Amino acid sequence: MADPGVEANVFQIPDLVGAANKQQQQNLLRGQQRDYRSDQFLKGFKKQQGRYLPGHKSVINGLFTDLMSKKDAYKMNPSAANQRAVEQANNLYLDGAASGQFAFDEVTKQRNFVLQNPSKIAESIPEYNKRVYDLSNEQGATIESIQNLIDNPGLYTPKVGQTKKILSPSAYGTKIGQGKIGQRVLAEARAGDGTIDKEKARSIFREQYNLDYGKESNPNGYANHVLYQAGVDGTLDVQIKEDGQVMFDPSIDILGTISSDAFPRERLAGNAYNTGETTFINTLADMVRVPDPTGSNKSKISVKTPREVFISGEKWEESYRNLPEQDPDDPNSPANKRDSVPLLVVNFRTASDNINKVNAFVLDTETDDVYLQRTVGGRGKKVTEEDLVARFGRDSGGRLLATDTQREAFQKERDDKAPKKTSYELITEEEFSPLLSVLKEDDIRKIAEMLGLSYEQLRAKALEQSQRGNIDTDITEEEAIATATEVINNEEA
Image 1 (cartoon, rainbow, N blue to C red):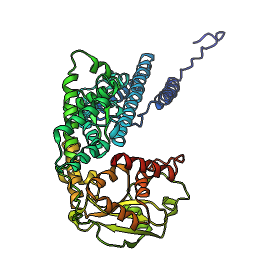
Image 2: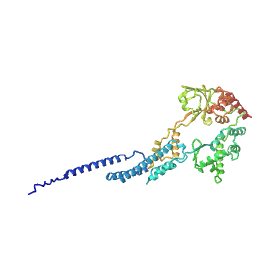
Image 3: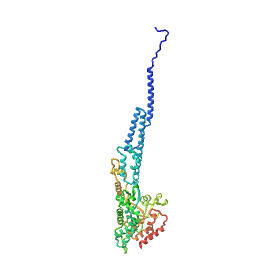
Image 4: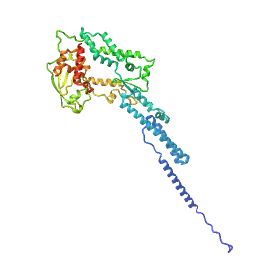
């Protein structure tokens, strides 16, 4: 029996289940907080929207895949080390994506420049396109190769040429043959039996050429023809453009190259001279008509009175090819298109009598301008890229297979099939002189009379600066007539 003076012990049993539940709730809450912080941390690491060169896409995608792997590892264990790994992978990815986008933008900009300015490129455009294609589709590209492309823009930048306007040897020969030198040769032939003395013609050409392009008399002209000929035969990597300009890479010391002892200047200069001389001789006719003192030479003028012709303003603009810059008040200005253009036309007797493809002399009775009427070839429909693809196709890389030569031949094919059209060109001295060498002076005077002009006035029309598209307000018609009269007197002397 218990001692009545001693209190009994009170025993309390611990709430183990409740404690366990509380601990579980705390752990869950901490886990949720940790997941929230992880999600918030990872939320900022997203895939970037961008455009990349084909060969660079795998590099950028590889960097993003590595970032995703680091993010998964962090989700499993959001340790400080894994957090740093995510941040480092993201920085690499962002830098790579920005570099890839920059490379794409720069390469695209240069390719578009080439497409829009083919005449300014001083290298083969097909070769440039191949170079850029190979760079854009690099196999096994790395982030280092992307950076190398950015650091070296010369890899994809086209060579923009420096141009130099040069009168080619053949153009020079034509100019001399159609100008006063050629008329001198023709005048001597008319004074004899009508046969051109070609040896003497060559001697006259040689004298003039040496003045204009001789090594000693004109070093700059000499260097220009050497440069031009070097482009023609491929001695130098320069391009001869359709407008006569020579284009070359400005980074190349062209003048230094031409001046070097090893450069074949004499050979090229000789070739240039031969080209000019041949063109000059070919410009001259083999025979010229000798005036018949008995007057039996038949006039080439077809009618005794000129024809009155009215051409619509729209058709006149389409046919009028030598439109100079004019005063806005000039009726020939495009801004002041006339409804109808009144013309007086004096034709040659037959088509076989047409000289230099000239059909007639024409006077615009409103402006007093004198034109030569020609029948010229029409311009066919312009050859487009779609036309070239249809005929020549593309290669596996999408590049057009047609060359520049094939494009030109295709266009010429269309031009040859186009209908002929009538053209009116302002008369110039270069056009007028050859006519004088064939037509009788009486014919020229008759033409002038039919057009309401004197012989001297008709000559003046060819000599006026405004008739050649370079308006010179300092010259009057009286001065032009005086100049023409002086020229005529010199020819008769």
